[in-house]
Image 1: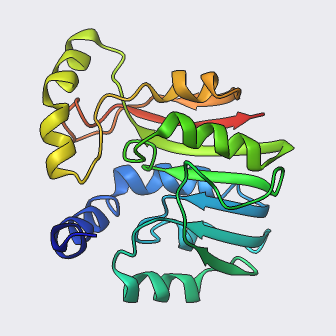
Image 2 (image 1 turned 90 degrees about the vertical axis):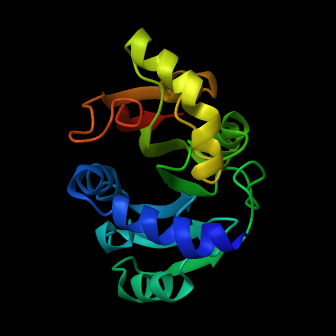
Length: 205
């Protein structure tokens, strides 16, 4: 973990993803979580206030340890009945098959190096009747915007600690064997179109 990611990028992203345009999307999916839940790429723990006591256990997984004091406070205040942190990579989840009822991913698939492999792993650790809840940004539907995303993606990856602008989130979720049951593509108001193309929804195995 670089000094840049820990002391500059993490605080900036924590503030940005706390804005109303991102917050309501995270809350919309996280509030639906129940049972045994895994959150991949949980970052600075911005989702933690939106989990309810319907979550019997919540496992948080991220290879980075960002804003540790802030994360601990949010974990302590979380209403899930049990909250634990696990180290590991989303591409190689350290859990048995069919372990979880729900997997949550919010603004993580843009950054996970091999997101397609991670989605395959998510499907593996989900119960056969399990659910993937997601809120992500990715490739725009408009071709002109998508072309700019492609052009600027290298710069975004550099300044954004590996974050990609142009990943086809819906396509990758379906290719991993999920059936998308709900999908909201409402763009992020007030943000440039290249970063404001949203994918918010529910998918099942």
